[in-house]
Length: 397
Ligand code: MG
Image (tube, helix red, strand yellow):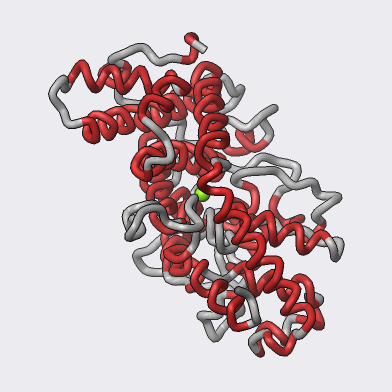
């Protein structure tokens, strides 16, 4: 455990990063392979294809609904409830900030990284992971499953209707590939429908980064929200998370008279910075060890190149394990999770029993998608408040 502790004062040793060789970044010009669209479009006079994709994602209904979807708290703590805890939207913006910073520092395609960060959670159902698990369980009874990355692809390729010329957003190949593959790989045999996304290869670094920036953002934010809500105690975090304790000690040494809250913020700032810097340095090192500095080599490397160093990876695992045991699955949260599961399961059953309760545009999907998938698609799009209201209207209490 002690090995995973950063040395105090780590944040003062930062050096400017050396950008990766130019052949590593995804090309963003309209002629590049990954900037192609299913329906060809005229290049924009002053916006790149990936910048247009980031804007298209930002302007969707699915993106706006992130404001009403759980990140961690299915019920906001406090009386009156605290209104400063993360939603899935503010989490997404934090992931976007970190991803842009890293992509710029590494010389990667910032606009591609931004588009992927903005899109990374739009496939999430209401009520966070409790809602996702309940929806998946409901689908299993019909031989189906729920995967939020694949659902995100369905949103951007089908459910978002904004353009008269085509269904969906007509995003570039690179953004669609990254939406599907940023956090996991899919086998070609199990997913023939994804064959255009280079399933035998890793995604570009811009996509690989998102899995880590997502985790760095939420681990930091959840320590913040966990302490802010009172569910986590400062002593408990300090005792169980050496990475935090080292930076908190550092902050107290730097600012001995700082109010406790500001010493925590300072520790979290250094915590976040250390993870981002470690990721940046590890990516640089792994790319440096490649035989040839090309995107093709990144794709065919023996392993993903976006990763933390082994020392920081061990520290990350400690934080994550602590948060699962003491925050996400803590007794105070379980009541909310049980309620979320009940709402999703009961509404799913009610819609399966009476499909006429589905909106007309969803009913039109039943012949091609089947009823169970159609019901899941409808539920997955809902915000927490919307599903609660519909559940009550369908007889739930
Ligand atoms: Mg996320």
